[in-house]
Image (cartoon, rainbow, N blue to C red; front, side):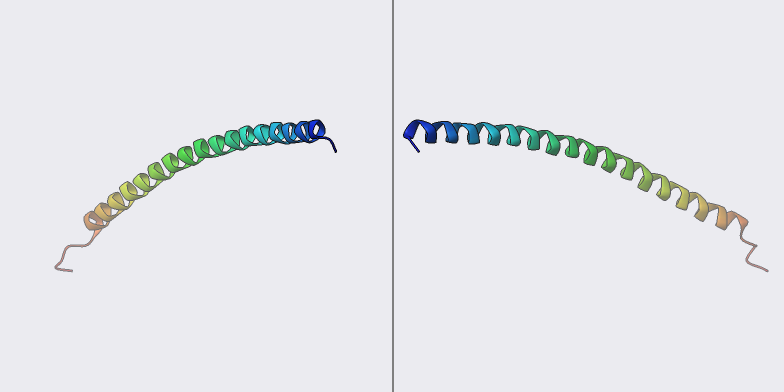
Length: 69
């Protein structure tokens, strides 16, 4: 294999690696966007569950029989 062929081979491999890195960067970027969106939804769900549990606790106190029973 001549030096010119080796150089072409190396340049070809480098081009494929650069393309792969760009593709992987896009995948990671897309995944981070989805993770951010899921974290936002989870925070909303946690807040909603906490609100509901506070409402239920308050309603249990209101519905409880008077202490003299």
